[in-house]
Length: 163
Length: 385
Image (cartoon, rainbow over the protein chains, first blue to last red):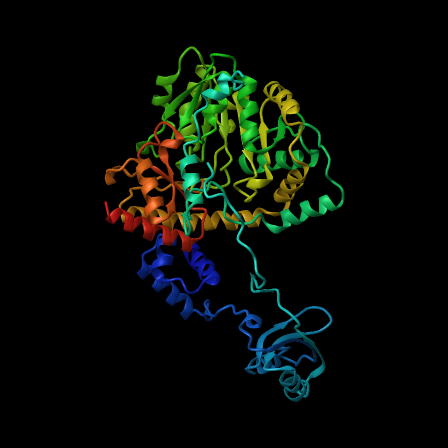
């Protein structure tokens, strides 16, 4: 991992759809070098995948998302790892983090509607061993996701020429 | 009725980009590479602190020199980043943009008939400012062969007994050229030996890519004979806030301060509050913007060279300055036809004085997508020639 790799990661994190040619001219590498470096980063699992930031509200699919806080009794020798990995395998769990503070695990869960989310929590998450308490917070509206604002922003107005 | 317009005002030539400005307003779908300002929004923490201060009623005059906390922060910032030592109390004025700083600096030092050397190509206001102050602007040409640095031999040729000062601007608008410490050492002896004053406009100091900016006043014995101008416009995307600063040894500063207090009183307080916040918390935002300019520069300059517009790699600012000589068109004709026929706005290099002829100033402070589209349109145009 060198400075060029870090630069590639920053560029791709912002827009993973750029072609190798485009990235090459920006970084003064050849397209082949870009490809090789990206392959190596993928192999090392530094790059874990490529995804798209979607404004689902605008897309109108009506999905519901919720943040779920879990209080969990840690396991001897494993701490939170085994239960977190178990929860991670559910398709509905989009994000899962271990937190400091009043609760332990934080899940971002999505479902077609409120019923689906609550069923998932009550049938799959809450009854799991070692989970002591759950608190479900439905997301009402999202304004910013992963650094991208989701509300409309006008382009700053600039004069066509300025010296 | 007699003609009330003064001879001084009358003598100022009309702006070289006015014609293009009028033309572009009649057109649609134009990609403008003619804008000498960042395309980013001002970082929100800066805006927010200024909005809050207005809500709190911070809407009055400041002292002539500017808000004390801003000058204190600036003094520390300059020392830390550029090893540039100026006292917040006695050697610094917050100005209404670098434009005002330039004007009061020139007026503070110019007597009628003084020759003021201006390294060119240069920002368009230097020579009119000198003329308005009653001085005689003397262009000193920087060439592509020297990567648009100021060559000591060329400077030496232009120095006469009447020479009083030299105005430089590195990183440079319009060429993107920079002067490293050793480059500046090359001209510092000439400046000292001929007892000249140096006005150094360093407004692009934060926008350097391969080298770290060297402040002219830190080189040799230049500090005591240098007026340093800088501002927040380019580094923090704050052009409309109009906040610059002038730093100089006390005697020079006091002279400039007299003019400042009568013509400007003080820089706008909202802008000063925003500038203070910029120094406190916008370092990371600035670095991100600078990094993005660097990526765009790499992409755009490679593109220009590929389509047949030879261009040196600019080390600073956000301008590329390719040559159009090989196309057989003058820079003005090239720019006019490129705008009319292919809807890309650039500024002909001759607008920026000596050494600008046969070049175009293309600002890459636009999105990568627009830069790519512009390159495509420019390539199409060149194929028709």
